[in-house]
Length: 369
Image 1 (cartoon, rainbow, N blue to C red):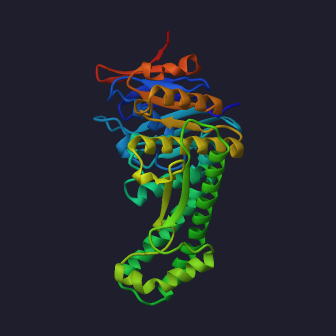
Image 2: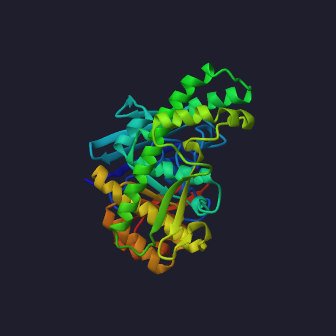
Image 3: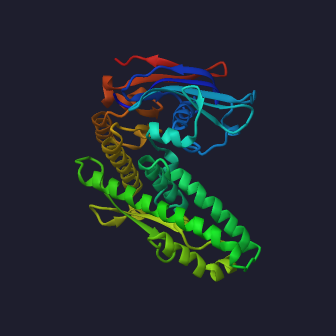
């Protein structure tokens, strides 16, 4: 049975007072004018993956205003382990609570049950902006293969914050650093290994596919120096770098200094120097490759969120994208301003019109001709 949402309900979430959708396993098309609440719907779907969702928003930011009463998102999800009733709730800005089958659950459990990928318009500048965005993109791909990657990253970041505090305070006694650096070395080496293995899976999936979208050559690089492979080598690197780190007031080595370098393979041109259209096509290719690799690993295609993706593609590329999604068997949630952007999908998808009436967002099933 394909991985998909059978039901999605939102209460006081963003612009939605109350919405209930009951899709099947086919791709989902949400269309309507800008500002109607389409992206808010797929943001709610993104919560079914570990982390803060596709906008990385706080629980307070997700609540409907002006009421600010808190919000709730629930979904009935068909997973390889069977149907799962998953709920998220925040009361008046409190941290998001996760319940699975009416029992409290950690976010890591979401990663075991659901695989979810997304591509947003804000990611179009990924190749030409700072390394932080590319690391985040890489870590989302890595998390899709290794659900514990997020928890490992949190352990590393917590220890690094403590180490950076010591550095800013100009603490020089090595005893204060040893335990923190050991924790950073162990989790940091695992982060690096997870990223490398994820890239290998993506590249293999790219090479094995015949697609209208270009392939990318990808390499994990460091903004400065090289990343040690083992935990012991990384621990030594932290120790040796203390003098420089004290001068800078922050940690200058480690996986938090990594960057994803991409090349448009057929042209041999760095992704950063490619055209806007080529950069977008490369991102789509990577998301499709990620999804293809997950079918082998997870036993089912991931749920894919594609916000306003059709508007940036010509008719041939749109048709190719829709064919790829249907071939994968993915319940892709796609948004656009009009149903005509999805003509090439035809009855292979289900359609919902998103509109605003009397200050409320309304979602209506729509039958195509």
